[in-house]
Length: 260
Image (cartoon, rainbow, N blue to C red):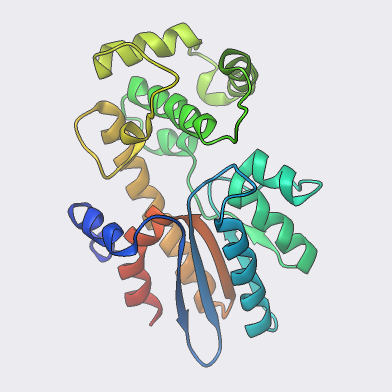
């Protein structure tokens, strides 16, 4: 896929401004198939309004498509939660739609590129930037959890245990103090767990090594995701995509060009 088909980053803010806050949707249809794309907000709160909207959009998709359906989720394939509340609290819209797809007998695939996979294909990327990005993405996710939030330090210990099992960190010593040190070095101030860190992991921003790494990773993701959607479209799949709204904004021009 040609990278130039994606929305230029400098136009992102204006396009997002046209949509306004919250989740939104996008569709492409022909006489044989349908693409439904739900741009989500990653909320871990079961009471967030996006979940009612997502359920209605999913029901609409099921009603308007009869077979050859496929759900695409962000990040990674998800485990099956025992109920909707657990799904949302443990994995936001990705886990929620996975549960709904299972209940409807619809297969789920993940066309995404993880940070670990990205680092393998881009060894030129700064490891410090990548480590900070992984950490701050977790902090951002922690910050979206519904109140009352669990203890930050205890939650970090559980998270870091799972990270230490990954191939990426086998030769890298990581700890909260290591993250704080990298944060001070590259961001220029002390880390505060109560501060919103989203501006640093936003690939549409510039100014820090974290933003630069996030943009490189995001560009690779967008190309892969659109390419996979195009592949499934050529296979005559009816596709239901659930990704963050920012991905929808960037991918929409490419999808309109390639699928229409």
